[in-house]
Length: 387
Image 1 (cartoon, rainbow, N blue to C red):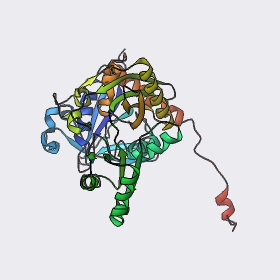
Image 2 (image 1 turned 90 degrees about the vertical axis):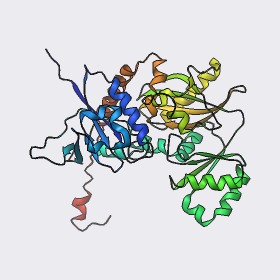
Image 3 (image 1 turned 120 degrees about the horizontal axis):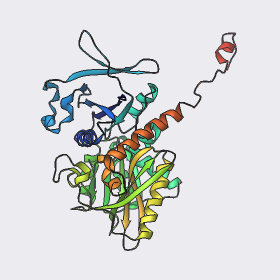
Image 4 (image 1 turned 45 degrees about the vertical axis):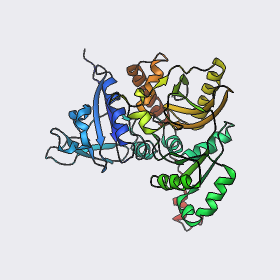
């Protein structure tokens, strides 16, 4: 007896500065999903926001210059919500047939995919999908809101300030003076809602601070300024689950400069390895005590933000003094942090099976919640009642 394969849509690309990173992550997912279990359907959203599907999307060599719409065998699609259903239909053609699927696996990094926007659409359409929901995705993208949650949960964070670009344009000198007084040099300047180290710079004096802010505001309307501490290394760990969660081994990325740059993360070595290609020590060469402390903080952060699926939590650590600060969470980490789970007994294919299982678990439990309540308000107002 031949069992029907589960139909899995892998959606990636989108209008994001992390577009190319998303393509790399998607290629890794497409290569490692079990073909015996799943019928795999790639959907690529180009930088103009158009949706494409076709077998040629599964090959990394077809993404040179991202001119995919000129490739043979690609079809452009559009999506809409029809009641409690989502249709993905070809734009052209006489006998148009929708893409049938059982679950969606988002692989979009950054805006319009990792920030809750895609998740909101899928929730409206009542579609099963992997990863976290709307709130966790949105909070996970905003580094400022994250820190407020961490502080509320008693998790240690470095000193920081933030401001809106609008306020900076109206009171530049006042904001600079406040930063110099409360943070001091050197400072780390970041767009509040971005990943992959895009738009992040160090400032060692006022001139560099102004320049770094000018760069950051090209990518966001809210800017985060953090204290830069001495003798700090980055230690990362991944958490996976929904209601029951587990934590991976720790890693220590090897960086060339004070900051772990986009180039450090993605531009070294193999073209399809993404974050897996970053030079790193796994497990991180730290004490068992420090490892357990970091893992404990990661689990608390994961639960506090209501994350599901898989996430990577990054920490700033003084290894010698065993001082730990939580830096940020990545609710859709580069390469899905599979390299951490391989070292934790989860080969990539098994990890993807687990993410799909968690996606259905979350979907089924959410569908048991009652979202309808008949208050009788409209019947009363129809009789002239006030409210």
